[in-house]
Length: 165
Image (tube, rainbow, N blue to C red; front, side, top):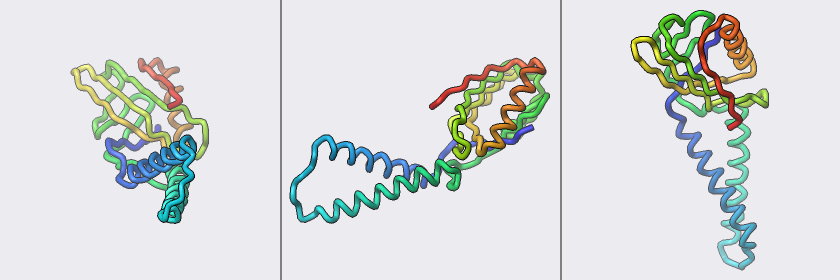
């Protein structure tokens, strides 16, 4: 059994770091293409801002990617077990589920958090649950894979697709 966090929104700090990173790297790319070499009284300000934004961007990527900064707002839990799952506080045995679709990002580095995971469940009453979930650690990823392998051996009907991005 594995318990995963569900979320619908990312944090404000995540978006600030992302925007800073995109603007910084866009400016660096633009400056390298255009080859800016003019003398301006504002050059020290530009240089200072570029250095600060570059350091902020690198720190953001390392801290957020390493899992030291929570980048999402948790709003529930997904429990995957051998013969049932719990989503949004609703326990569903597999005999009450028509379809389980999983889209999971491949884990390639032990320390990175996997945010781009999605689950879609359609039960026999026509209810549909679509949520994003997080695999926070290498150990949690191993537990998730063990449950998926148990589902395969137990003949649970589900679709899973792995993707890199």
